[in-house]
Length: 306
Image (cartoon, rainbow, N blue to C red; front, side):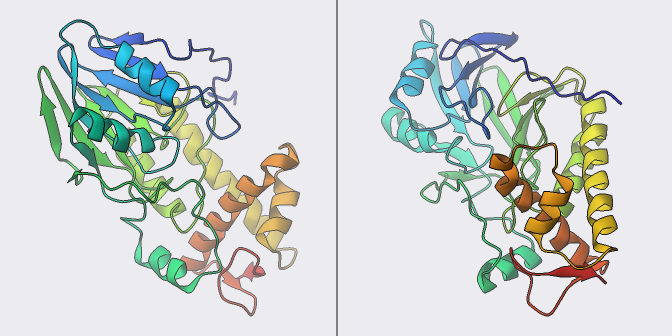
């Protein structure tokens, strides 16, 4: 089956682009292997606007967001999908500068499952890449909460997986999906903040609500969510099957499995790939299909079939 990913996205960096009535995107100048063409910051509304994911604290991006406001337009609310350094730092600065409240699920580490919280406390699993540990929202949101402004209403969906505190925001049949679902690549799931079980459940949750389009944290609009969600689900299941197949031949570490499985991925990205493998191993251990060979669960531990 052909990949549903789109990698020829070429946005005008720093220029507001309309995507739907009352919705514009400004792409930040922070392109890279993990951010693709840059973070997507969204303005919602025509007078008092919501700003979703202000992005990294870069003066040029801050100026571009403010320049996108037309006569009589202001920012009345700042919403954050998750506290990673490419999404939330400018929220803190702009909130203070404009006197506007910030809204999010909580701090970066909120929402961890009991298993992930225990692993984080024990240490040994690594993780924490890119967390914005300084971010604390003025207002916390739970699943289903609605934030309303002039002519718009955004409904929060708790979509953990990439980060336990990850929110997506629904605007009618549109979903601002953050880093949970993106159209250019599969999502990094890195324990203890990333959780494969939560990620799969969040895919089901989004799919069940039948959104017409997804507006992600990086990359282009997803015009056909259904096939992409099915691909992401199948991709995770295929990775799990590969891990189990290799473990059937003998015990292995996450790094060893990564070298065997990700043969078509540049070695510069194997570190991130190993985090995804570890996430699958933790999930398989929790389900009793895999066990740790002698040591506690860790990023360098040896794993074998249960």
